[in-house]
Length: 196
Image (cartoon, rainbow, N blue to C red; front, side):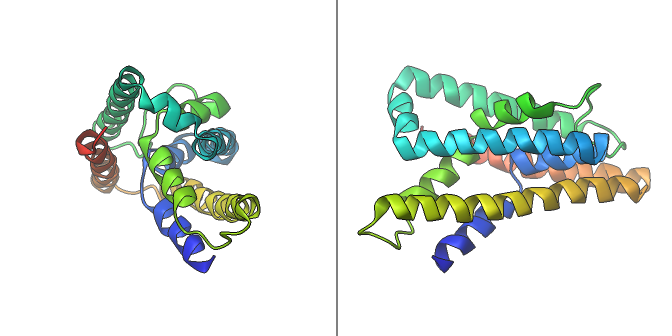
């Protein structure tokens, strides 16, 4: 169980589309709007988790046409986000938007987030600690996963808000944007070159 919790911590804390965009929403719009977006990410990640646990995601992605469409949409959307982050200039908002994305935006991001599918597949197909009680193991994993997920995502929201309050020089803000975009592009590259 401890190994599972450590895996959850390290796989979720690493920059991916969800946490990077959440930090951006926090930086651009503050805690209230960031919390709404976080709620959407939470609902979305749990829908992905349910799809992985029930096998629905595997069934849907078994069709080569659906898998190819999902691949194109995911990689395109993540590349678009990376582009927007990299070219947002010296304003530390990571992603320029007139309005905050809200709950729906968080759900939609997780629906096309390949990291969410890969991580949840790893969590629920490995790290067995109750082989004689699979339902109880799934319930415990869900509890551990959600507790750690919530804590880490509030941390990333706080990071975005904190960076915005620092009023960093334009050059530093630009460097942070480029670093965030590079992290996003690593996720895009991994998705692009992974077997699909």
